[in-house]
Amino acid sequence: MGFTQESLAEHLGLERSTVGRWERGTGTPQPWNQPDLARALGLAHDALADILGVEPAPSSPDGRAAVLDVAHDLVAEFNWPDWQQAGQASVLEPPWSITGTMQVLHEVAGGSMDRRGFLIITGATLAGLADRWSSSLGGAVSPMERSEQHHDRLSDTVLDRLDHRLADLRRLDDEFGGRELHELAVAEFRWLTRLADQADYGSAAGRRLFGVVTEAARLCGWLHFDAAHHAAAQSYYLAALRSSASAHDPMTGAHVLACMSFQATLTGHNQEAVALIDAAEEQTKRTATPRLRALLASRKARAFAKAGDAASCGRALNEAERRLDATTPETVEPDWIYFFDEAELAAQAAACWVDLRQPAKARPLIDNALSSMSPQYIRDRTIYHVRSAEAHLHANDLELACNDLHTATDLAGQTGSVRSVHTIRNARGAMSRYDREPQVQELDRRLADLAA
Image 1 (tube, rainbow, N blue to C red):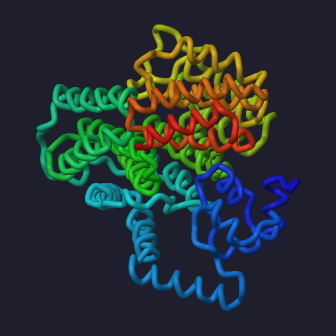
Image 2 (image 1 turned 90 degrees about the vertical axis):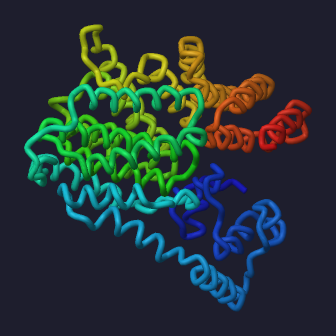
């Protein structure tokens, strides 16, 4: 119909990000938006409902009241707003102190929100969390100052073992994905939370322990994000952010913000994603390693790309490349950033240019990433074959696009990454004008087998 995301959003009186989520398949038009959307697209209400896979939405004023009545019944049955408000309050309201950190850690460790797919915190509240984190880093009370014990149960050897357990989980995630591993990670996080609450340890050991708790919570957040449990992922990320402040550890906190930014970017909150990275860069400008600086710049580039800002994206990618080039064999980097190397930066840069519909820039980067990436990174290879397919599609090469999606489908069957499957399906959705082509119909059969 000649609409852009911006013009359709303006026509419907909505935010562009809302229309963007519809187009990406990460959101569905609400019943009260459907009549106006159907008129804008020149469709009958029933035809739009068939496309969306939902019941036809009422279009009359009485019908809208009926929709609200149904919504009220759902609220009463499932208590959704109370859940959302409780979820926000339990992680936002406690003070940024040791007591508040422990309260949030226990709340998240004992919670079960995997069924909820939406974010519980967005907008200015999400961006403001980075300011709270920044303010609390300088004034956070040491974990040990709340204890009357004067001896350590947690030796360096024990803390090393705890670190190594998380390192193993991180590397298993490369091959198996979030759906397979998140229960293991949650069990680890719960145990570490009890240890932080009940064990005796000195100040240095306490800070290190809370650093381990931070990484355990962040890993839980990442694994839930990969399994498309966005609300649960965000709750773990917020617990990790608080724990990093209690550990007086801006480096691990910056990594948490990088993960939160990536989630915000992929769920349509680009402005907040940039704000989160800005805070991370500000707090670590004197302490961040070159690899961490490169990671932060690459996350900012992805947010700019999703927002359609090619100039800012290019500058951020140049910064990421410059920072990564500054690493040397003598540079001491935290283990949790092992994954971010030249191949990963090339893949992220390729994804940016794919989002910006510049396949000529994306193509060599994708090829470089796939040729140099470790074969063990099965989930990442899956997603980058999808990016390759999208670049081919933007260049109007359907056959090569289908070939890449076939490869991605085969790889996705080896992992438990829901995100990978969603990425494949979104790419297939962009091929709708080729629905009757034999290679696309064969791809549909393969995807049906994967779903089964």
